[in-house]
Image 1: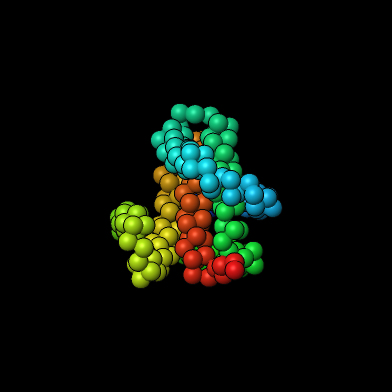
Image 2: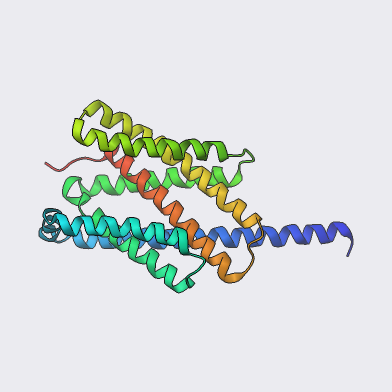
Amino acid sequence: MNTNDTLDLSLSREAVSERSFMSQVYLWMSMALALTGVVAFGFAQNPGMIVNLMRNGAAFWIIIIAQFGIVFWLSASIMSVSLTTATIGFSIYAFLNGLIFSTLFLVYTGSSIASTFFVTAGTFAAISLYGFTTKKDLTSIGSFCFMALIGLIIASIVNMFLKSPAMYWVLTYAGVAIFVGLTAYDTQRLKRIHEQGFRSGEILSKMALLGALALYLDFINLFLMLLRIMGRQRN
């Protein structure tokens, strides 16, 4: 076997490993989205339970705080916990998200939620593919989108008091742009994480799980922004 054959074999193995890693990322992300969707739809069949949840401010905020806690815990501690523990944590987060998302069925029609989901899925797939295949360095875009996200959160909190319809729509369209940018950046970042030499089975799986969480967050936030635009509210 000559040098060129050895190089080709090495590149082939690298490509197979990369595809396996990204497939693992998308599989975990898809499973989390499926869990969220099933839980949301299931709880939506009992509107009274959802109304009681919304009226019980303490329970609602406990769920929200628990969600933030799980995300921060996984991001900071994934390498120090077992893969099984991390998977359970991710699953609990997806379940709690489904519980919160069930409230959307009280506001929007089921058909508009479904159509928005498919538009989100198509948009996400196209942008993620771009992030995976582009040769352009998206680091600056990712940094800009992250800073813009902080501004979006602050402005959204301010508008809770101002209740400005104009600001609401500006923030909505800005949110779509921000999460489109973050989707492309996070996909490229995951590809580069794999290129950095993570080859150990469990370490690679943990990085795939953490990457799935990042893309899951991009997806659901993009979905929520598009739902504001496309969703038809119930009468």
